[in-house]
Length: 180
Image (tube, rainbow, N blue to C red):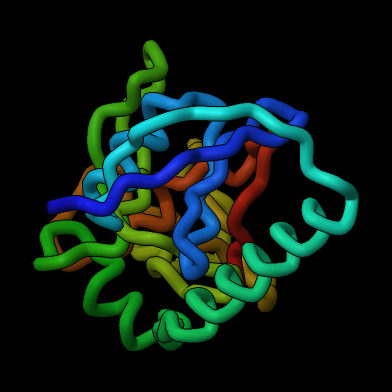
């Protein structure tokens, strides 16, 4: 039979899970009822409101911070994607791609590039596939200038095995990637 317990509500109308190892809080008693039923095998028998002192609030916050840090330290972070990964998983038509290239939801925008996995700062996600030319092409839409002064005329169509760099907006006001 599940254990019965009384729940308390803090001054700021937050409900706290009574389990010492859990830092779950919510502003709705119904959510707390579901949480403890699913995760702790508790059953609510009564509900009461009372005010926490500053010391009690600080203690609860410290407990929650310690638990959050403990859980986060257990998570293993993957290695950053490097150029070799980008050449395998950052191209059109590959299995388990980093990026997807599909029709954009923006009217008249054509194809867009979308993340298919979590991307971390420093990841190399794709390559800019295309033809290297010495003179700037007349259509600048898929062109990027290289450091040596030559130009890379990127693909305007998706091609299996080629990178998706030419489909990423370089002139966007919200730049969230860098061409290297």
